[in-house]
Image (cartoon, rainbow, N blue to C red; front, side, top):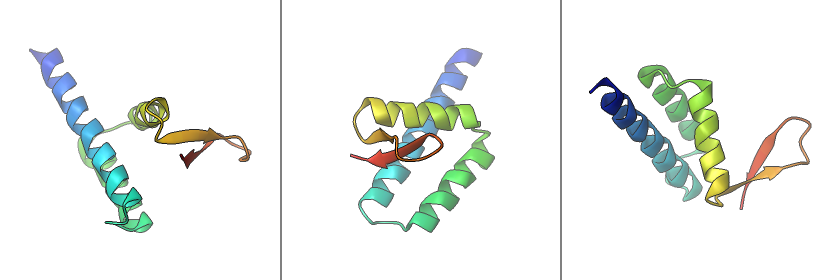
Amino acid sequence: PFDKNVERTQKIKDRTNLVLYYMNDQGKITEEEYTAAKKEVEEESGVSRNIVSNIIDKLVEIGILEIDTTYAKKGYKYN
């Protein structure tokens, strides 16, 4: 039972971040609102940097983001 709750909570977090991404991408929220909302989701839901990294990896996998090699550190850009 505990594993199902953790899995469900993770799905909610993933969906929330994906919706925030699309809202920002479509101009429904500003970059500042997007950043603040993602931070709030992380703080309120206990989302770790690892979770955010997993979400970014998923966005790369589905073709929404791509790795941008022009940055000194690991960077991403919209497709």
